[in-house]
Length: 110
Image 1 (cartoon, helix red, strand yellow):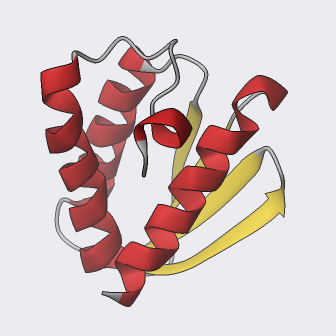
Image 2: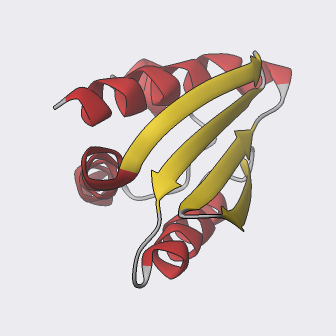
C-alpha cells in the first residue's frame, strides 16, 4: 500500500509505527485469507481461516486500526471454520479500502 492510498491524512497512527501495522495486516492476509469479496465499493469482506486465537487476533488488530483510522468500520463474525472480517468506509475513503483490498489479495497469493 502506498502512503497516499493506504494512509490518508486523517490517520493518527504515528508514522514510525505504520510499517509495523502494515506488516501485521500482511501477515494476517498471508496466513489466513481464503477469500475476499467486494459487495460494493464501500465494503470489503475478508474470509479468514479460523483456528486457535484467530478471531481474537482479528478483533484486536481491527480495534487498533479503528482507533487510528476512525473512518473504518470493522465487523468480525465467525462462520463454520472461518472468521469473516467486514470492513466498510465512507465515500471519501473508498480509495483507501480499494488499496487495502488490492494488498489483501496480493498478500494471499504470496
